[in-house]
Image (cartoon, rainbow, N blue to C red; front, side, top):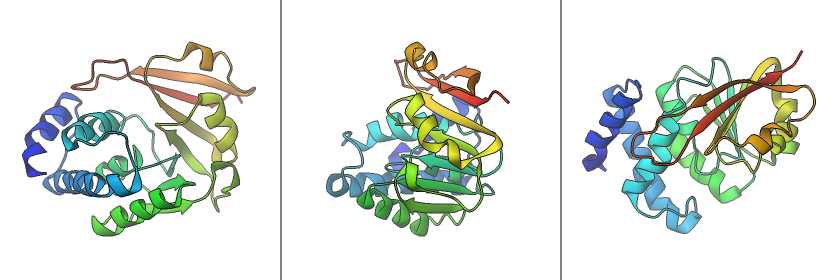
Length: 209
């Protein structure tokens, strides 16, 4: 995956994301693991490593400086997006990856131990069933069906002054008009993702009280 280093660095620079040599190595090793495990574990419909870099890793890097501070849980993490890139860029930050699919969480365990990423905790449970020992400062998701489902399923994990961070394509006006009671949109970030022609947004939500 060494051939992708220049593209990774170029995209990171365009997004004002500074990557150390070690972080570059870890992201490229993650890409290699993702490509190797993908066919057996069905992590993504994308099969080409170059497209995986563009559409998964670079896309995830676009939000690494927008997810606040403190403990974070990536719900419906799948192949670890955006949680693993976040954990690589912020090694001091405790990040939990939650997914109900056993194959995918086995892959996440493998990544966390191989790179290694001691700041990652992997949990194989349904979102609604997982009760953390301590609530999280942030809940992030890149692939949840709807913002309403994300909030309803995971609000019990969020600290009183915590934030939801929902990664979306086009701004989902219909989803935002159907927010659960007590939840409001705090900020909307239009993301500029190098190599991505479509619209990308990060929607930050909080409780109204």
